[in-house]
Length: 245
Image (cartoon, rainbow, N blue to C red; front, side, top):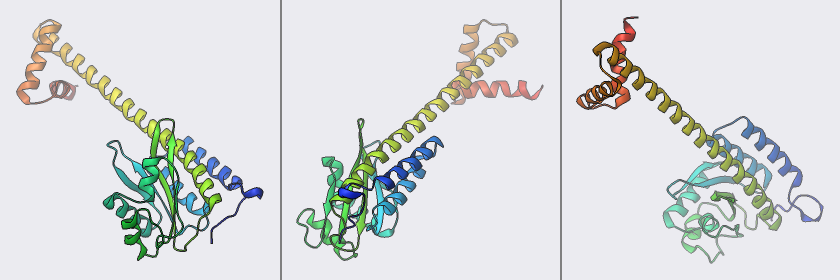
């Protein structure tokens, strides 16, 4: 029996989704990591789709590979792993076709026959999955599994699709923030290295009475001789001077 609950007229669970969105916005504002975001997504998906026995998120990595990055139970992780190994299943189809996929009973499903046969003995019977997409593309998919046949209906499908859309924005934003943070750290490191090199050149100019170009050439020679980067050679050159202060 499907979990067709919600607002009058068969609308998705507007109240619950509003609460989910509020919690997700709060988590984004607190600048949590992608892992923390996914843990919350899985937890809220299981609570929102009441018939679910387990929920999980599959993300597409930078190389186009798939990975279950968060799962609420071993059943979810094992079922997902079989999809990746066999190269077929509802989650893989949701990612490839960028559309929700639903299985009412794996024992009667004629699509993805190898995967359905493989999971039938685990107790899994129903599946619902929706892609997590933004205008930048598909970031992954969220899925819920159930041990009863016919556990999910059209309202659950619309609800999960709406939830996946909001989750996709959150994941995309969090990834963008983390990328910006990494770039910021790289920029800071670049500035630190530039300053070290400038200090080392000044040290050589003062110590050896040479011009800036000659000082830089000597610093490069030190770096090559030690098999190091220019900034590392500069730091080593300045270390004795720093310890004398």
